[in-house]
Length: 78
Image: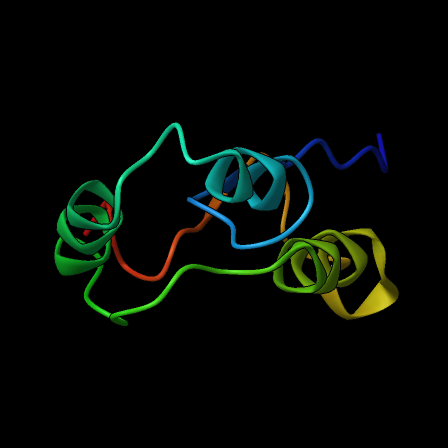
């Protein structure tokens, strides 16, 4: 059929909407540290990390990868 349907599951990001939430002060530093501690990579991702994954899945390099969910979350869901 030649149709690929994949999805990307982003983790916590440090930019975009998350950056505004962090800057608002609604999340204290302890909450952010606790969230980071649960991410094996030890840091939040960026919108660019998500974009790279989406671009890869949409590219010809992923031509033989159908029906997958790619978690881009620094290992949080491992």
